[in-house]
Image 1 (cartoon, one colour):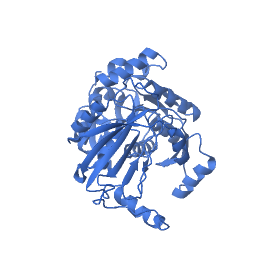
Image 2 (cartoon, helix red, strand yellow):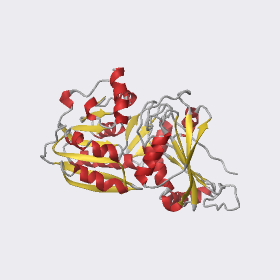
Image 3 (tube, helix red, strand yellow):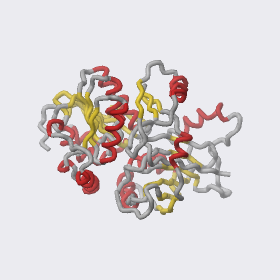
Image 4 (tube, one colour):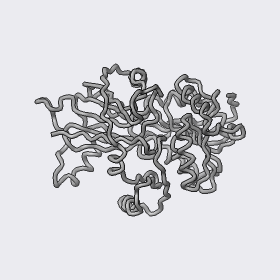
Length: 403
């Protein structure tokens, strides 16, 4: 008997968490976020309605786990990998069934499949998106980026109170010495996580529920948070820009490490800006978040989202005085394509000898991002790689970057 549990988070602000099953037929990965869908669209259902997108019969060599990661980067709220032969005589178990010995073997199993070793020869990948997502464009983006041709089908997902499911299963998250907690977490919950990881010195961030993208355990977030800690602790950083801030977790982490630091966040999503500012206020940290100027966004999809935000007038646009090369460090955890497009804009925000940290970049995309920034930054390189994702770093040179 195979049970697939899909956990969704529509009203909570998190990044990406993996929840791997130990039955023979299912792997789950569930980031609780519905805002970064590829297209805003005009769904006719309620705000929590979801659609399931299934890519069938993928060969193991097509890296189904990497496909899951990419789908979540572009807005999926949940992904799962299942055995294409599940329920047939060809099904081959690759995980142990839960029993009293599970905890003695779970670490070994996680260690294998977390790096993509434990996969079936043929897999199905399912992803869940908000009803407003343009699934055709998502399929095209997947094909173009990963250079694979995939057939897919779309199903409606029953409307349930997924928030309750998530709240019952979600623990505080410890990332790079910072504990991320949500409104329903108790002090005991936090102490258990800290004790389990044997951390002595931990900064704490309280993150309110919301629809903004970004907290936790995804490799790109870990790469960025590690880079932020290294830069702040080894250099004089008094002003940091979090470009594509989402929930503000990266900028807020920087402020938590160095309370005297001023962080500025920019995001095209008006709800993300609102949530990030709320999170800064809750934690009493010096971070202000804004919409970017309209002219800085070139691609039609992002410009459409940003125009709606400008028209609403609910959040402030980045002031001219802050839209200048005044930042000692800039971190951006978005996708490779917009990073390449925004190279001049981002370069125009970093002061000479300032530091750059970029992620949201698949390993095979790293060279393209390095090339895009090499004109404006010295020593641009792929500094780290984690589970198929890379961190690109550099130091600002004196080449002018006219926006």
